[in-house]
Amino acid sequence: MNNEAIKELLYKMADDQLILGHRNSEWTGMGPLLEEDIAFSSMAQDKIGQSHALYQLLHQLGEQEPDTVAFMRNAGQFHNCILVELPNGEYDFSLIRHFLYDTAEALRFEMLKQSSYKPLAELAVKIRAELRYHTLHANTWVKQLGSATEESIGRLQHSLEKALPYALGMFEPSPYEADLLSDRIFEGENALREKWMMHVEKVLSQTQLTLPDWKLIEPVYGGRVGQHSNHLQPLLDEMSEVFRIDPTAEW
Amino acid sequence: MPLTEKQILEWLDEVKDPEIPVLSLVDLGVITGISIPDSTTVSIEMTPTFVGCPALDMMKNDVIAVLKKKGVQQVNVEISFKKSWTSDKISEKGRKALKQFGLAPPPAGKVLLEDLDILEHVPCPRCNGTNTQLKNPFGPTLCRSIHYCNDCHEAFEQFKPV
Image (cartoon, rainbow over all chains, first blue to last red; front, top):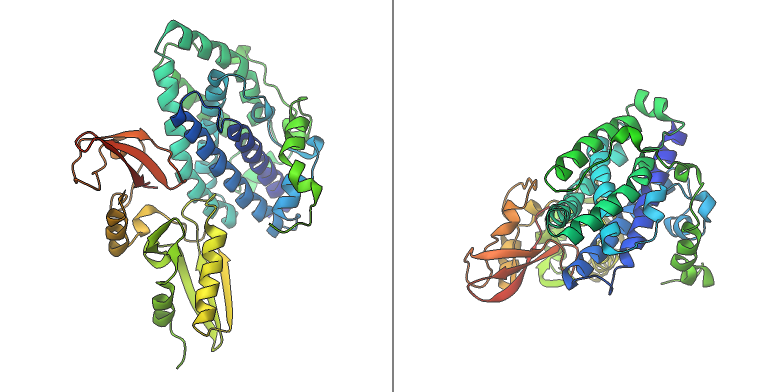
């Protein structure tokens, strides 16, 4: 089995979960409703925990300890898509991003349940089950606010149009697509994107939001190869501030 | 007396969920394997209820502490997802303990959580009525959701089905 291909896949998934987990945690104490404060904080905890489990798999493949990998790299060494590092903005943007990302993530782990790389297939069963709560949350609010008032629909529409090019960046092709497919590790980003589009269309068709023509949206790539927006490094500086004061401290 | 799996299970009944002190780890269903490679060593395989469960390290340390107190010289605990946890792993005894604690147990049996239905009318742990509504699929810990009983006029929590 191609270890380099597996590592590339694990890194991008783990980094996505860690960075979005951190962004979600920024809603702690700031949510528009107490319920949403709790929801985003819980999803943050889930995602950071899931990233830890994925970094643990990387560690078993010879990479450094999860804490070192999470806190000691700079932006250029992260493989998350740019979508997850964008600032939270207002609630409408965070909600739309959460919907677009978690729809993809749930499908990704559904596919990975069949992976020939057993440790990942086992973990995927567990993570997939937990993500049901995330997609349930996203779908409920997108359907409600996407059909509520002129303001809520307008805000979501605006955020949707802003987020979509970055959302397509989630599926930036990997240099190992052929290896992953032939080794039956993962069906690939293209297959995932096709499924994701269908799910997004299905949910949005139950709202008054309008999906632009996919063909007219230019994906924003770069995140998977370490080319990030200016928003990632400040996030990493904040996230790792305490760890870097004394990386050898015992907690 | 040689160590047996049955004996180890009895001892582990002393180790409780740090957040639900009436529920043992055995009844919670997170102990997924016990092996006794030699007369002085016990290896335990554990799995978390939720991947991000922050109580996992504490539970692991409690398992080691209790078995050492019982005289086991070497205790190894491995965290594994080979047999990942689902809410139907909670034993009947565990489900009763949850209810007495005031937490609605998850529905018995395998759960296919494709829509809101199974979360909508969770029986209230106080009055057993189903005139209840889901307030939030996320609660004070990763494994709990928040509900409201329209008859008792009080909120309650459920141990989430997963």
